Length: 59
Image (cartoon, rainbow, N blue to C red; front, side):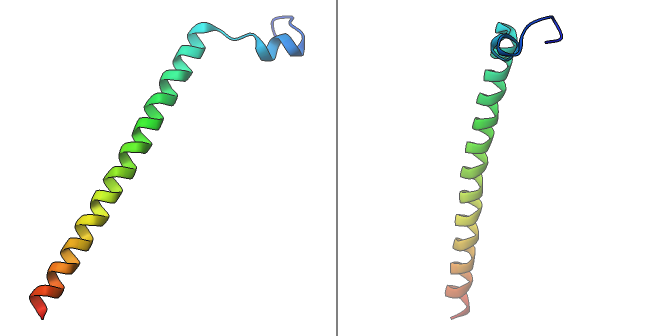
């Protein structure tokens, strides 16, 4: 609309460079979320192992 386009064209006219940047950012974001979930599970597992070890030592 700022470039004299009607609303339909303004919403669907996509710059290839912008699309590439957005796709790359989405892939990086998904990778970070995936790895953080794995790290959280690792920390939880380690914490549980430490708690189990304390129970065994204290008995």
